[in-house]
Length: 154
Image (cartoon, rainbow, N blue to C red; front, side, top):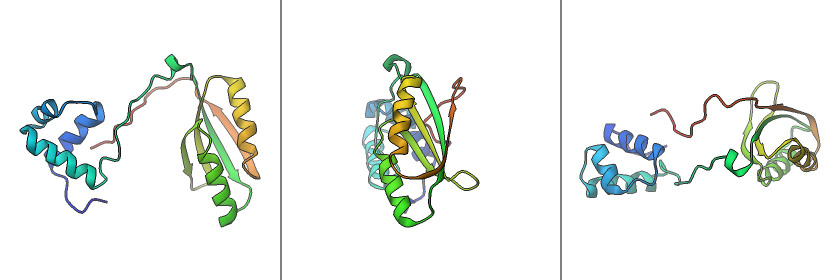
């Protein structure tokens, strides 16, 4: 949580950076209605406060032959700190896992996995189940991506 309030200009800067983080400061300042120095100071302040965590390049999965998205639902094998710690470390170390959540409800964990194809998923699955005992593992294969964004609603 920030220790300062975001104003309309901060939000405009953040929206623009979510669309294109590589914008030159001059163009970002123009879009935000500022001159370069105040804009740069705001970006610096937002970064130092942790509002801007990092800047990354978004890659095209299809061009990299990583066309299969799998949502994996896991029920915990046990419900204790040692199991959770081992499971979290093991799953986080698997590069195919791009998102990993502890859930409420009937499913304990949800993983978003990106792989080339079913054979690659099978190899991944064998590594996943070696991480630790699990109560149940269920996989759903995405048929079509309807919406994808990394932009937060500001």
